[in-house]
Length: 390
Image 1 (tube, rainbow, N blue to C red):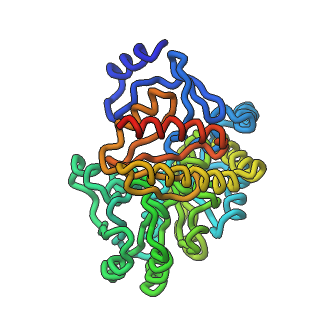
Image 2: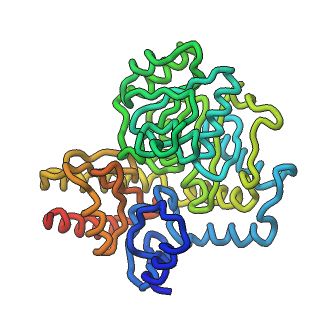
């Protein structure tokens, strides 16, 4: 089937919830993708910060094949070796003690909210404006963007929103019924908004003083995206609960919520569950992803090439007045414009590069961590030309 045939079938049989770009991706290798018409693209989006190892990584393929021949799914009524190995690995590479496995970031955030309420016996969750925490009814309520939740009222109660970057606003919002503060390390969907210096440290201190839990949403920032394995390392904080997903499975759906200390023991039997969460296939893939990030020095690649790419963006900023800001860490970067960003996204796709528009006027770049300097240089050359055209 070609692009048009696939798009026509989509319009007839699939609920029209996505503003898709007019290509049907067919296959890929490393940071390169091809559509159904045979057109080639360099991927600087990575499935919304998911494909940290790119496409068709041989170690991921091997892990899927080996595990598929052994076990794909069994109920969580039973133990599996793959699940406990992944849980142990996550504890070893983080500050957390236990994990509950999910299928997505939204489920991880929903589970984190449940855990915070169960552990504290309190109901209120403080989140921030411009945030994004998922599409379930609860996590869309936690999300600090009205456009995602207006059509779905009435929404669940128990959520308060304050400006991102204002620690005093969080302190003032805490009441006797506050269970937790839910916050992104870096606001991804909101435009890769980096918190002010010391902000997250201040929020952590407030939570400790007020005896409120700190939930850190690292669904987009985890597993090397920012140049560290997790962004909490960048900011020197120790959240009580952390949520993960996206890059953990390099495209295989798997996520989780991690907790430490007494909070990690907050759930009792039957308090929470998932049919597919922590299935053997997903856990085998996730173990391979974590090992490959280490074996191939991808944290260093993310940090070093991220700095290189950011400097190239800064050079463009000095050249073009329409660029108002460049920000981010590692290979999680943004160019903010004084206009809608979709025109540039479309022009870059036509030139063979996949990037993302978010927050209306922001270009979001989150390529695979295996991206090369040569591929970055190729993209920058075309991006420069596109800016010169507009």
